[in-house]
Length: 359
Image 1 (cartoon, rainbow, N blue to C red):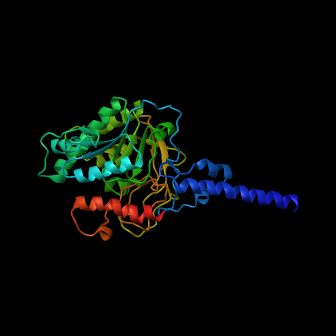
Image 2 (cartoon, rainbow, N blue to C red):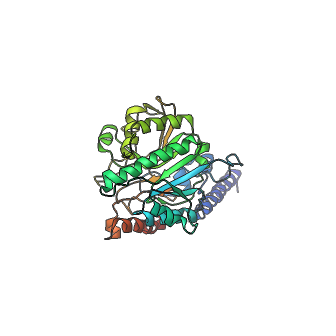
Image 3 (cartoon, rainbow, N blue to C red):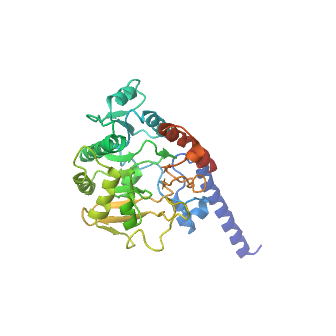
């Protein structure tokens, strides 16, 4: 065999070995997944090395940092907060148990009424934080109680950030797919991380081409984050507010974000969901980063494969195996009847069967 042919065969063999090592890590990656540096070293696209596919047209590289930070964050206070009242209590228990099974140890349920707090505290199975709403407006589920809960969520978030706690705010109907060590977000270095929403609030979407999600975001306790939250609290002074609307109006009217490498996320060549669905079609997919000229805090918006949010769209638009969590809605066609609580609990099984089961 001539030397050139031998070198070629050795190179092919090496690539085969590396690829199988990568696939081995994928098959057992309940926690960390694949190290994207392998793809960089081979000078190959990440999705080509892993062989992963995503219904949103992009395979995320986020959250693949493993869990070894050399003790750098020992003693750092990080909390995952999911919020409930007596109506959502069954969902909150499912959410908490799932995070426990995935290996999280820093998750808490925030209880907004004494009934929920007592039910969660009785046997010590759940870590629970009381944030009881005085005079809950049950007569008006949306403009009353729901807005009271959203306001309480903002005020508690601000209190924790001022106390030096880094927080992941998430809805209890969000479905986590794998363990992502939250210290990685501190290591990555941005102050605030947002997920892409769909179209609400519509006036902001129509003007900007995207909106952020108040129901899943990571906030570092930092001076810049506190300035950002000060602006949020100025728009939510009372006991009731819609935090989804509040965050987005602050984001687009107050922050004056300078984006990294682009004029704006909604540029003409941006990757979008290719669907005819009126709620999903044309939604942005890619991650973007920037800095606020008003507060000087740094921002990262996660890509839609990492933090998946669409209406219906299962199984056709399921994310890749690198997905962190799903925030599905409008799954009646897969779940059938039942009340709202039943449908949200059933969505966990739908996600596992139709999205995670395809991996």
